[in-house]
Length: 496
Image 1 (cartoon, rainbow, N blue to C red):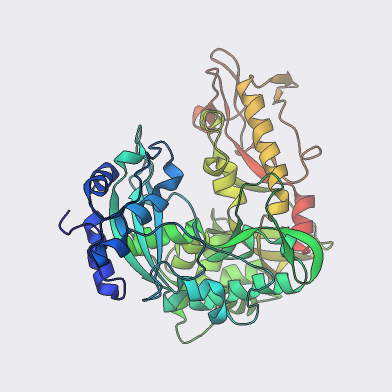
Image 2 (image 1 turned 180 degrees about the vertical axis):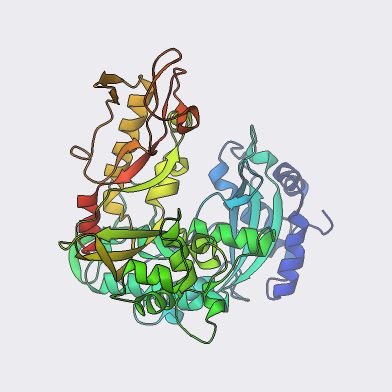
């Protein structure tokens, strides 16, 4: 290390940041060795030049979840405490240690959400974001990033690769304030027990504690106990931060910048721009924006052109930060969607091999997403006009059902999908939407193609339409789908 351990001034922000740079490219085992041989074991003892008499206790190298606490103790010299103030309270800076991961395509993502501070429902300010405990504690954060997904890596091998002083970006504050108001309104309505990670676009809440029914708190406007939750910056927001502010991998188009004269969250900007064409028919819009009605992806192109974007809406800064996905939905006169709504195809082998819920396909592509539904309603037989839009995400009270469908699907694939041929058609033993009324799985291709015996295929598809099963057979690619009856309930607001 370039500087002696604890040689910084906790009342000087630059001194803290400069000292933090000593962590860069140092294995944790090295930090621990320096600590063990140092005469001072706390920041206060170093400042007073008083030899510490704290007993060295052997730490668990396997306890990866303690990495942040260990950095606080062994590098910054202060012990874990329940103090509600920021870690470096003299300069109003909170310390956060968080992992990133390098994906198979060499892009970098956040490995997890950034948990900020526990919400005290009874004491939290529900009217002014800038008066919240969250703001007082986390208005500035010194974030230390490490690679948390290196094969066979132990705690002793962890290395801080980036030190970043985070101050909330002005460009994001309209969305942050909108998220806060939505969550605060839910608490004020006596619905703290219904809070969900899907409530926010950038800022949200997550459950925090031991679980198993042990972490419940009193809420102010309802006698129903609510799960203990913490404010968080969502993992999608952290991924954007890592890619664009930390490692500078990407440059993405911005909706808010496109309309920078409007001081409003991007969700409001989108709503205003799209609903300007309310009651306009599909084909009138295709003609107005010069779009081929037969083109694949015509509706996403339409929304992109309405917003004046040059690239896909899903790839904008705001959609990346919010982990948001565009869905254009046609509904009949009664509000029932014309079709079930599909998600991305999954790989059979990957679905079976990965038993980690938060790394699973349904969690990443379905449960953790926010959705923008653009709704066209039938006004005459097979004629649809732009009717409305809706933002939505799966609420936490549905997590058990989504996980059940995921586990059931994995079980069927792992134990061998049963293929039944009848009238030159092939049927599987996957449960249909009749049994799974929130999420189900079926083929995701125009033509089906099933290997019912070695090298014997049935169907009008081709090999590129298929994916390999764990037992070596190839069948049509599948994806998870939202049944249209459930989607109708979502659009009607029954699952907000």
